[in-house]
Length: 160
Image (tube, rainbow, N blue to C red; front, side, top):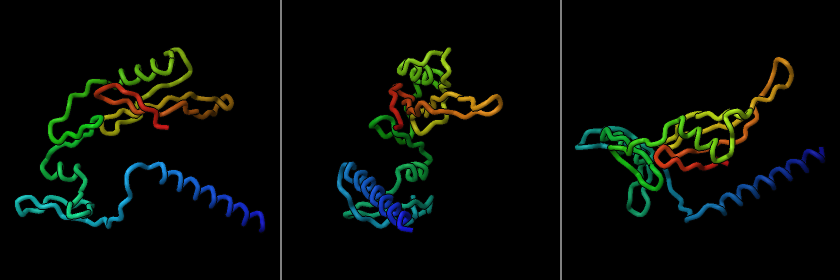
């Protein structure tokens, strides 16, 4: 029983340290707000609802919700926010895969698989992994890395 208590205390201490380090690493200032569901009206007609908050007299709601209210697409490209017409995608999935291969020296003949897993906003999410056979019939994957590839610029950013 004593070992369980020690394990709990050590676990809580480590968790607190990690949480504190994460909060300390965040830049900017902390504010206390109350998030509440707000109805969004255009010309006195309710269009949608979104979670928002009011801080120092300014109402904050997700820009994606406001864009959808007006039937506009919203996208974040680098440090720029676009509402309505979006910039053309310059990098294809095939090019994103090749960019990751080139950056990390992964040849097509290697045992590593490089695949676009999905898209998130203006980024492709590229998964690099290999298949490890445990025996003749079973195996598992070993991840080498996960990467964001910007669809407009081709910039690669490791997710870890």
